[in-house]
Amino acid sequence: EACELRDGDKARYLGKGVTKAVASVNEVLAAALKGCSIKDQAGLDAEMCALDGSPNKSKLGANAILGVSMAVCKAAAQAKGIPLYKHSAQLAGNWCATALPVPCLNVINGGSHAG
Image 1 (tube, rainbow, N blue to C red):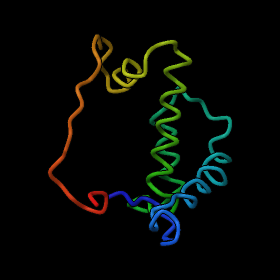
Image 2 (cartoon, helix red, strand yellow):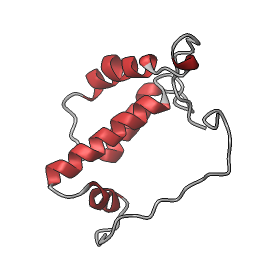
Image 3 (tube, rainbow, N blue to C red):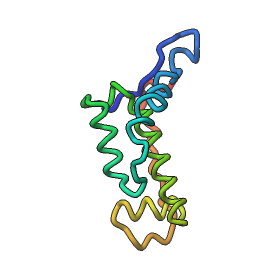
Image 4 (cartoon, rainbow, N blue to C red):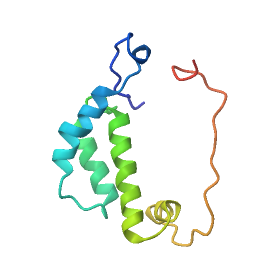
């Protein structure tokens, strides 16, 4: 399972703060990905995973990697002049997306986010 990088400072957001993940984005990922093309989503994602080097994204934080990946995806959609859902569909090989995807929700599980 992917690991989110949390601060652990119980005095700040009950230990759920993400300044360490923000630092990963600003100090490591930004420098490494500067100049890369947003047209290569899979390549950028693979590069971020390689930079992290852990099997569960615990070094840079899955939350940092996912945030950058989502920003790249949104930027690429905007550069192409199409809605994000169409760009995401195209990345998945569906070039005929005509409707927004239907979300799938998981409301049964608990875990640390439940509460």
